Image 1: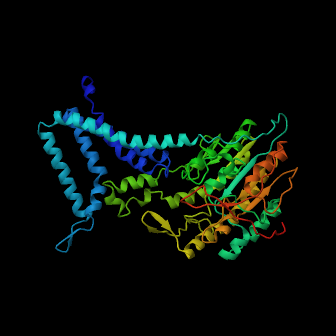
Image 2: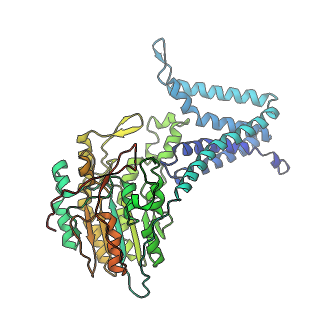
Image 3: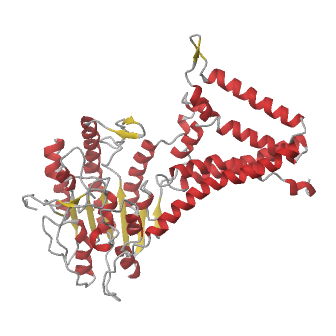
Length: 508
């Protein structure tokens, strides 16, 4: 056996990995690489196990390799073929059912296997399978490489330099930058959603927060808003690539992952603390402390892979539901996990820069008012999910109510456990939908600053967050930028229209 290992059918492993890599390549940019690691590892290990079992039965590497390839083809492509005959009728009898098709599919597979293994086809098939296996694996690798090359090209945008003196002896406060995705301003919530978060805002004020009652975001979506905030500059001033002719929205991802603020704080000895978000471009996985929700259940990527496989017979009957972590369940569990872990962060050695992108109250809506899983189901048109206006407002209010009830205790825990009074920024990156576009910029914006406290004002926007922090606590001399808000469309993502702030200042 040892002498014959040189004939080991490595091509069979390529066939086993191909379905996983193809699904990953098809969805790259929407999913993270890590969702596929377990599926690839299991597929490879199972293929190796199948090869050795087949070799044990037939004492022939050629037959073992061919049988393994056939087995993986039968397993992974069952669902793809069944999709075309589902519901087909003959003389009023539905034959497009798993009950019939799985029998036919198994019989065909066994027949082909018997035909090949009994004949003298093996020697002719081996070079064909080896070549096909290599060619197949090239395609997803090319797609993945092309995507990564595009991401690398986007790094040509260099984050701006921020001039901040180096403090040698001054004790620096922890900084918490907590984004509540899509949390709107109090007046918008009252007028458009019949929801009053006044009690929550008062709790913040009682803890010492300043609530900027007329604040707007600088841009209407997350990537734009965070790119500007974390680099303390407007996009239009950072690169001439942000022009109306450019449609590449991933340009901003590098600015979030390698921001000027992040660089300044790391150079001054800050440890980075970050959390899983579900969006690769807002996850700082290279942070000193990165917290991700751990689960042994089947993830969405694996579920999609299995739904196209022979296991679709069982998944469609919900036999696998107890082993599945749906995207809704994961978002719900992740939100609770992040809030729970936040209370532990103050005990980490400092100084720390804590970046939290909490994806609620942003849809999909999965959180009940008391933190229970309460999904407002989406409708689908093609692959696009959507809500009616009433459904949107119901789900949005539910998640607001959960945050307003549970977040104050988390903030109190941070303040109580911190050895030195921290800086806390709590804000929406943009406002809700189903409102006029100018109101989609109106956000919650609250600041907790220890002494010496800077002068704040009601219309303060996020682009000035870190300019104020660096000026007040790092002895910098950065001019505050004009507080401006811009709207843009999807077809021309960098064609910006300025939206004036017509909010009447309220007392804080």
